[in-house]
Amino acid sequence: MSKARVRFAPSPTGPLHIGGARSALFNWLYARHSGGEFIVRIEDTDLDRSKREFEEEILLSLRWLGLDWDEGVEVGGQNGPYRQTERLDIYREVAEKLLQTGHAYHCYCTEEELAAEREAFMAKGELPRYGGRCRDLCQADREKLEAEGKRSVLRFKVPEDRIISVNDMVRGKVDFACEGIGDFIIVKSDGIPTYNFAVAVDDHLMEINHVIRAEEHLPNTPRQILIYEALAWETPSFAHISLILGKDRAKMSKRHGATSLEQYRKQGYLPEALFNFLSLLGWSPGGEDEVLSMENIVEQFQLDRVSKSPAVFDLDKLNWINGFYIRQSPLEKIVELALPYLKEGGYVPEEPTGQDKAQFRAMISVVRNYLSNLAEITDHVEIFYKDPTYEEEDMQAVLKQDQVSQVLSAVRQRITDAGLLNEESAKAMIKKLPKELGIGGKKVFMPLRVALTGHTQGPELYQVIPALGMEKTLKRLDKAIAVASST
Image 1 (cartoon, rainbow, N blue to C red):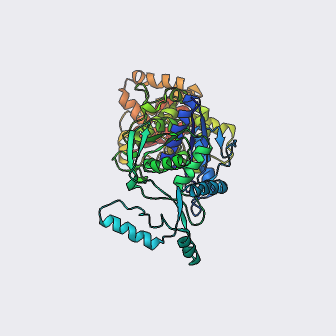
Image 2: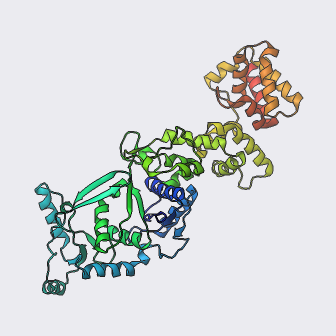
Image 3: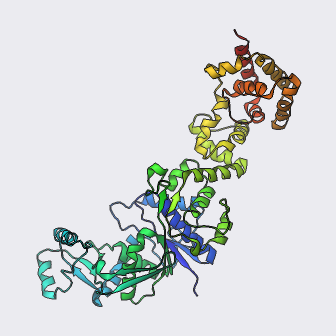
């Protein structure tokens, strides 16, 4: 058996959305698991909406996700070109072959005539389709219509009274009656091929033998099979993966979260987290683990574990997985990834010094345990930059307790004596305080937390003190002591 050759063929009419990214990922996984090849080509025949900047963004998103390709745009290969608008001569040649063998014909019907025909079918309760008005035009009729200035499209002649069976690798056997398909257009009047025609030609000439794509393409499959048969080409194996729905079981939309990979990248999601999360949208690994490395996923991926049921996009689950990767990644990596958000928030100079980076490192070490994405970091580091005012009623209630001045003064003295506290020494100092002062833990820790952060909950105090540094820590303690001592 020849090795698997799969492809991802996006249309550059917008950024790479979640559904497209999942399709690309499943193709890539299938190729890498089976030792096959992954090809990326561009379907840019929608001339009005296709833009090169979208193509560049899609390719950037694929690479950011961790996908590479063996052949295709920006990589090259022996089956190019890999943009459809650069393959028009190829489509014309194949279309002419279909015309000469009687599998295609010129159609001169106007939009108005086609609209009236659709309405007539629908009025009878039938699927709207082309009724074949131009199917048997003779040469004289065609010449007359062309003399009148009528432009033609090229339609494929669908055989009558036949069932097309698709043996889908995910969905099993699916049958389509030709009578519900109708003769479909393969080349438009401007010479541009339609999707079903171009994709069949490209897949054959690029030797694609496994087509893995979204369920919404399943109705296109019988048309493509008919084209393969008419040209005496071998038909590839098909696998149609399920739709992605929101938690409310509605089709994915902006209300369920960002819809493009680029948006998730900008929000501070890590590519390895998206890779992990997307792989679980419709595919189940052998065990119960949900955090899996790329290598582990590649090793386990098989189409027989891809579900027929719709996949549910659970943003909470994505946030949990991403938070896990943020906590597990090397700290230096998170520091570098977080810097742009801190700069945008005004917390970091454009050219941070080594001392700046050391402070950022300490702060990020504290707050990354609370992040579900890196864009949230500006909310969490605020406690290190904005001095508390203690004006809120609940803050006042904590600081006005009788023991507060004693507690904060004792902490101040110990920090001053120590000269500089790291996490280990700060933790040891804080742990001893209740016993040394003879005061209950809550009455020690809550005032100290309020004094240092202005909040009643948050990161561990032994992490906060080194991240604040000596100067800010003493300044805040003095201010809180003053509040506690005032009447």
